[in-house]
Image (cartoon, rainbow, N blue to C red; front, side, top):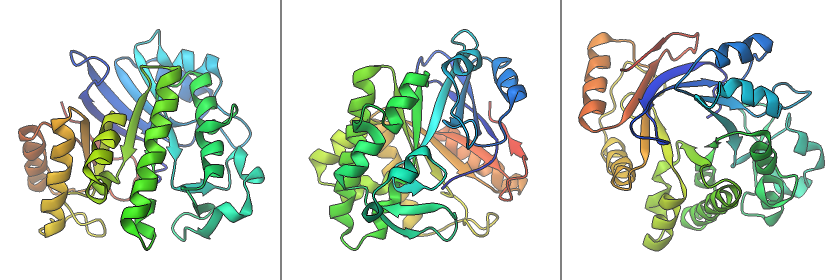
Length: 288
């Protein structure tokens, strides 16, 4: 899910487990003041869009400033399951690579992510989207729409295709920068649709993930989920933990009692958490 707002949470760093990073997530409304504000932070991980505006990307010098003498880590958002009409690549994308438009996100189109032409656009070409992210100086990517494979009829077939795409993205990135990090936004249950060998390769290729709407109903954030889905997802994310991957649970609950239950659960299970308001008006809560 694309989230056009600012988030803040804290988490143990996956760069150095002795560090404690504060995480921020902002995908729009950039200006010179934003860059200065990021530069004033330290021990932080920022997830931003690669593109400063519709006219240009962030520059290497801007990323360097935001890193604040390497005190911060800067990640770029990157969609792997949809093509976005506002991206520079869109005017050149083969039309047979596109499918229907996402009704919830105008300008975002289902893409044949299993097609080699998408590989070229995302990571294979010399001027690929990933290459530009790395060359600008980002420390990692935050991969979205991983669960696009669930929109296909043959779930296992397309889960395999998505997993292989992400593995290839990871290999390409880490061959250029061994410290480059790969994070997922949802889609963690993909490992249930993979054969055991591919599942392990997939998990090894990533560094962390977020799980959104795990405890509480997505449409009614104050309504706790009690279902097989909850139990199954718990099993899934705990498997990632056994491989020492960072896990962040994102929720929108406002009830103080329910918030505390969530916080207690996350601390007991060694996962990070973010609680923010569902309307995305800038209200957020910070864990220690």
